[in-house]
Length: 369
Ligand SMILES: [Zn+2]
Image 1 (cartoon, rainbow, N blue to C red):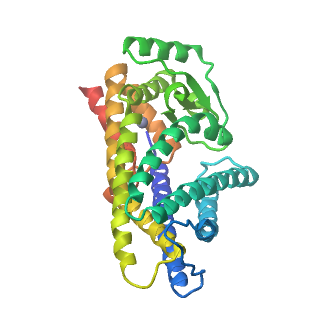
Image 2: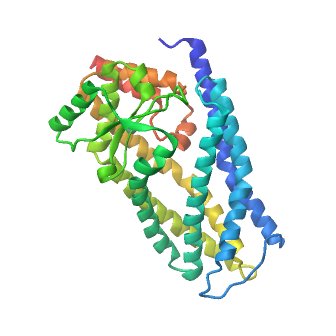
């Protein structure tokens, strides 16, 4: 049973997490608006450009200004939420040094992605002011596909150690399950989260040969065999239903829609006033992408929650162990400090998984069926 102080603590943690998520959402639009204001007053260079000359220097300068203006507030937020609060609630085991090293790596990678992605988009827009959103969408889809290959083998190992799982019982169980359900077998890896956090997790990631199932060491250590099997069955559900492909499809359509709306609004905003500068165009473009992504995130989250529910149903039907699934969810809720009763708008805006009490409830209903 979960005791009352434990529930209250989970509630406190959830409240703080939502507050930080909201600040995080608003920081980037606010800074972009501020930069646009400064740019309007000539504080950023005002350089006009020829029709087919791409002003790379201007583009890169504008992107570096945006990225560095966002860096300090983002680092402060990351430190308070990702380090101080995680320690205060006993979730993190990371030293400050390890946290700083991991954050530096993450920021460097995000800088490279930010510069490449938005540098290309800005250049495409200057080169082809009408059709840029189509070529950018095609490139974005290619980028998602390449990321599916890169993340498990190149990017994830930069942050966490992963190695082939050694538990023979689990390997055999997975092999047999794949055979019985006619699913292509998956390699099984353990991911070492235990040094940093108490939180437990599992996932299926990657395309083709890079595809693998990952189970955290914290889950392997703290859960019973049947509980681990139900978590693995949930992940197999994603694999069987090709949820990765479904998500790629929705992300691709979503990106194309978002870029089209950005294009229309950008044309509208830039139609008045003097000749636009690359800096002004880039700032507006980033601001619109930012706001529109927040507006479309409830839809993407709702799709993700539906896929998660389907994977839960598969795991329940396949394992026939609703009790083990219920206790697994209860342990996950305690370890990850899941909000026991999140407000509807929190779920709507931030949750890509159904709230844990709903998942527990589904297992309980199955138990009594
Ligand atoms: Zn899942």
